[in-house]
Length: 100
Image 1 (cartoon, rainbow, N blue to C red):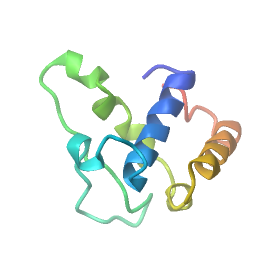
Image 2: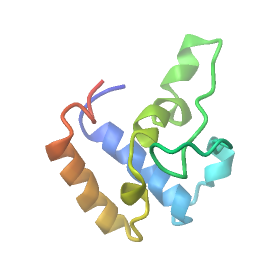
Image 3: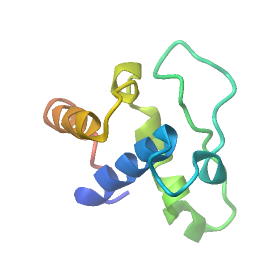
Image 4: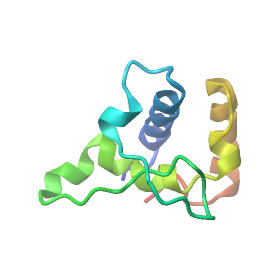
């Protein structure tokens, strides 16, 4: 994954999809994880395996790991502006979150 604004935009788009404020539907791109684990949050995404190396660079593949590393309090935010503020806090406190 690239660092910089692209990972942030990707996570914002998943957040919008989850909340129904995107023209894209969450279930058209992702499969929700059916096993609820005690870590992380309740909107975990299944990471699909791909035979083609090219496929791992698609939006639906490259955003999964970063999205799944968010905490429940991060994804429970109601507004896009609140989520953007939370991502800024994450950027400042969790070194490497936006870099791979």
